[in-house]
Image (cartoon, rainbow, N blue to C red):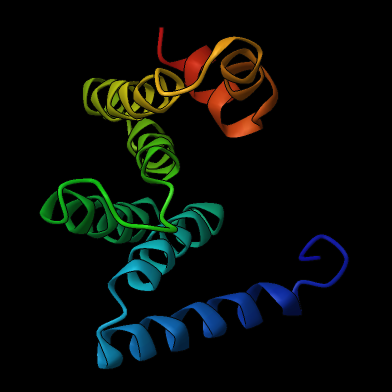
Length: 136
């Protein structure tokens, strides 16, 4: 929507900042992690790599504190998006580490599935496919 009307860009930032305030105030850790990750992507899209890194790093720190397991949070996507921020800032080694963490999480989930379901999970879920393609 930002391409059609740049006003949506500022609206998105405001919504994300308000959401972060609310999740921190109420202790909704899962929503806070997702919001931090999205704020990282938002700042990256605006060309502010340092702010992007600050937010996406906080999201991954919270994931680590939770043992990388929080219901309704797709940890591999948080690490994948963090890797994009790291790579944009030239932190290629760290980006590769984040991608490998994402890959390990995808493969761990895939290992719980059988046959065709596992194949579809790895091939047909866009985020999984992207992670596996980028984390060789």
